[in-house]
Length: 368
Image (cartoon, rainbow, N blue to C red; front, side, top):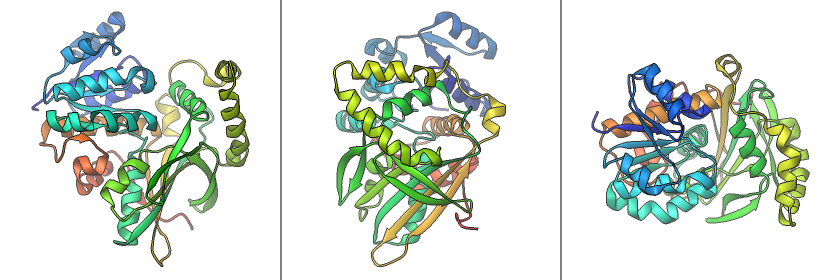
């Protein structure tokens, strides 16, 4: 291994899953965060080095990594805690991976740090987990089936099994906050902002028609870089299909409320019971759900090509994908530098093989 792997946020839910996945690969990362006592306990349990660092302090994070190291961050919300970490990686030439689902944050990284990362040799992979590697995988497969004149892609994220008790504190917070944020989509070659939840689309999933609502997704940023004929990309979430149409009205009400004085505080107060305590589903609960993602790619004058990929639960998959990416960056020569997507970073064949390695694979069509 040519570079160290440093894991920020190991005391949190997602960080713990990434640590477990790294250890299963025989990788012993440096674990880092603010809570010295909790870090020491984890480090002692696994025989690891640890470092106390404030993720909002650029200088402290920059002192933690050198060129060629891999810095993994699971400390969100990333709009609040992510910028100092990302900039420290870019300026030091360390590679960077995070678990964000916040597309606005990824847009900022691309705009502010892409050129710098290319100069320093840093590969930056934001949102390299369930958000949004499965969609990139499915969409690229579908686009290849559609042919060289592919023009549009629609992507739907679904869960097989109930998520009523299977969402983490962080996911619930992101879902709540996402209702007040715009959802970027690619339309006629331009990036446009629409209201989250303002559209509903049906997909066939395991023989059933399921609705999904408009959400953010980094596919709208990175797919057109890999597929130059693509001028339309839209991402949907169908975790709770029965709520898709009610969410259209709820998102409108929430967006309006957020604009009035103290509206944000009112939303937080009303939704606090929904957020729940810190943590997330345990191994037994994760085993009850699977990830299922659909992509429909359309070329001029043809029917859509349809691809389905399926894998472990969203949380297990995130831990495994981030560990795989960290190992790749630490042991192989990168294909490119900068703030990039999964295909641009590793090449499609390597990404396809890596996804299969962690259990994310193409499956049969939606209709049975």
